[in-house]
Amino acid sequence: MKIKTNMLLLSFALVLMNCKSEKETEMKEENKTEQESPEVNETQWKVLFDGTSTDAFRGYRQDSIYPQWSIEDGNLAFTPGGEGNKDIISKDQFTNFILSLEWKVSEGGNSGIFWGVHEDDSYPEAYMTGPEIQVLDNEKHPDSFVAEGTHKAGSLYDMIGCPPEHINPAGEWNLCVIEINQDANEAKVSMNGTQVMTFPLHGEEWDEMIANSKFTAWEGFGKYRTGHIALQDHGDKVWYRNIKVKELD
Image (cartoon, rainbow, N blue to C red):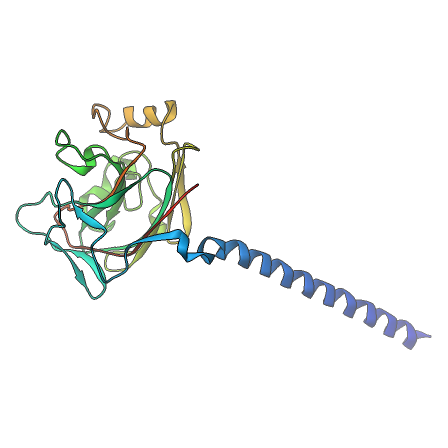
């Protein structure tokens, strides 16, 4: 009788283990689908830079791209010259979208990623209208140590700081994903696979953020819901790659 009871218990345990294994497999498959779903249909993405052409960009208030921006080993590289003010913008404009790109900055370097850039002679620089996600060497650039961390890499510049543990150091690639949804009044920023912030794009909370920043008296800053994407010349060597945009319905 004891042997028969033990065999029944063993059979029951095996059934439970099999059910648990099947459940774990189902959960893994569900999670895999959720994680991979944004990438399933690559035709949804508009490629701005794939390592072979800079045709999707031009200089801010220019007809062509500045020669300081070139292709190096399949990367979009900025090599500073003597003049400065050589920001580039996407030829197309966007309203609701996801921007995905990778960046790598030189030692002590600084650059930036803008959206909502309004091109006009009354705004000599792209940063006068476009909010910025900072590109920076957190270890050696002076901006990293001021403004309560809101000038560190990955930050919404001068407004919301990005935790530095989500940033790779100078000379290493960082994946930045920026989701801008003007209709939903929500922005999301992820660095290297981790969402680091969300914030509104207009309204009282956005206005308060601007009022508490260096942009409080900037007439056109953050006002344009449709605009260009821009990459900044801040006088330092910087590289970008795998730049693509997916417009949101």
